[in-house]
Image (cartoon, rainbow over all chains, first blue to last red; front, side):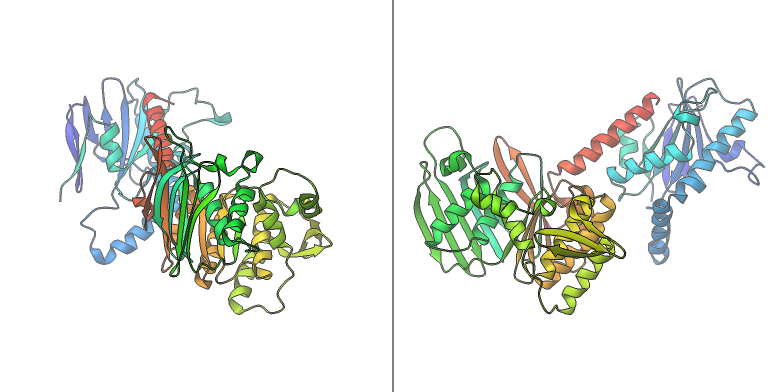
Length: 174
Length: 331
């Protein structure tokens, strides 16, 4: 069953999906060894893994905002955001569902929302490349894995999410 | 320091008016929107060596810099429907103003001047010329070779003898460049060499990107590029790895601090961003040249992200769009 999922200030309307869940609700008690993405959403034709980053969150006190934003930028710039967070998250989450024999036979997408107005198309484009590398989208020799794995990955900011993924708009509730 | 320009019916422009900032003026625009023409026109006027009649000198300089077929000014007049047009050009700087009209037959018909003194100007063309410098000047003087005069001018400037004494601000910029180049430039007869720690490298063997930095180094060392000079640079990014652009921008902003006004045409996102990010207290303005119903127009903005239209940013949006579409359809 579809649902509205909330990640702090950001509200995602997945009502039109077959199922929409917080991933940590299903990977209960595995956090000591596995990282997990935020949401898993199943549609008629596809399965989505979704991770949300919200540097524009208004609840971050203005005192620490500058510091937090700088830290986020550092992670973005040094690619550790991808290599240490976004990459491991999708690999562990996929592995978990695979080992649990809980992966429906549908194409899988990994979508990351970085809610940051400053993310220009040029930066988003470079983020896409990093996400492809860190999530091991392609196997050896740059060809697709013989076994089923991700079918596509993409990084969005809030505006491009709402523009491209009209079936599940995201809004900010302050 | 050029403050204002008005053009009517000259090359691609039918009517254009714009103000400039005393520091860095950056031009973007699709191919064929007149970026290079604007730079060349300003340079021709600013950098003319007045020999005989003031306007005649400018007239001839424009012809040599633009190099129209048969050196006919007629070909530089904006071609449009209807009656024969006349090109009008007016420039204002530091309370000085001058304007002139050239009619459809390419004849100077009107000229007005309120005291106008050409100043030192340097034009760096897209193609790098230092490696081809040996013999080029004599060839240009003796033979009919088809090169716009900006190529001869830049070689002439590069060949000027070094200054005996340099100010600390000049030394500082030269050090930044030397660090990147790994040495200094030397001139032996008419040939340039890059003198590095253990070796001397002739310019034909030096990477073209490094030669660009070397040219800046020469121009600063010999005073061709100093306070009061206007610098025109067409596509600094050509042959430079984007990682090198931060050095170029650092050097250019130091020159701006020194009192160099500059006009730069570019297609490089990295160059523009670098300027935006290093900007701080500098005087800087972005201009977008664009076609609107067959007319070239100009918009300006002090901040890059507000510049409109922006073909460079549009292209990134298009690429990102394709990437997302591809991801959504399955890679």
